[in-house]
Amino acid sequence: MADLPSDKVDEAKQVFEVFDKKYEGKVDAYYIGDMLRSLGLYPTQAECEKRGQTKKSGEKTIKVEEFLPIYSEFYKMPAKNFGTYEDFMEGLKLFDKESNGLMSLAELTQVLVAMAEKLEPRIVEEILRSTNTKDDAEGMFNYEVFVRALLQGPFPNEST
Image 1: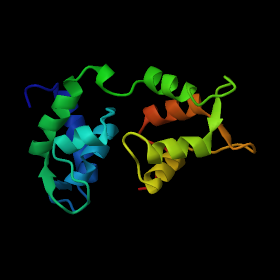
Image 2: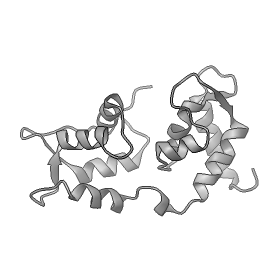
Image 3: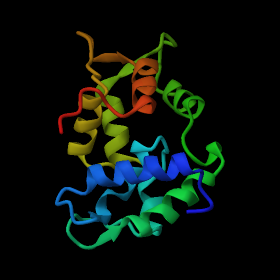
C-alpha cells in the first residue's frame, strides 16, 4: 500500500493476523475498531461503523486488502480527531469534585454506559480490568493513572 510507510503496512498485517482467528485471511468486521486501537489509534465506534465495522459479530468479514485503506485513512488523520491525553484529562476533571485527581469509579461507569457514545456494561468492565483500574475504600480511583493505562495499549492484563 503506497500511501502508508512499509513498516506501518507490516504492523497492520501483523495485527490483522492476530485477529484472524480461523487463519483464513479474513477478520470479522466487528473487530475493525479493536484492530485500529491495537495499532495505536483511537477511533470512535461511530467512525469505525462508517467504514464497515458491524454492530454484531458474525455479520461480515473483511480481508487485509480491505482493512489497509481503513487503517491508512485513520493513520493520516490528525491526532486531534482522536481523544488525546489532554482531552481525556479535561473531561474527567469535571468529575473530580475535590480537585485531588480522584473520581468515583461508579460515576465513571455510569458516564461510559449512559452518555454520548454508550458502551455496554461488559465493555466497561473489560476496559477497567484491562487497565487494572480498581477503586479504593471510598469508591474513588486516580483517573490520570487510568487515562495513561487506557492510552498505552495493548493491555498487559488482557487474556487471549
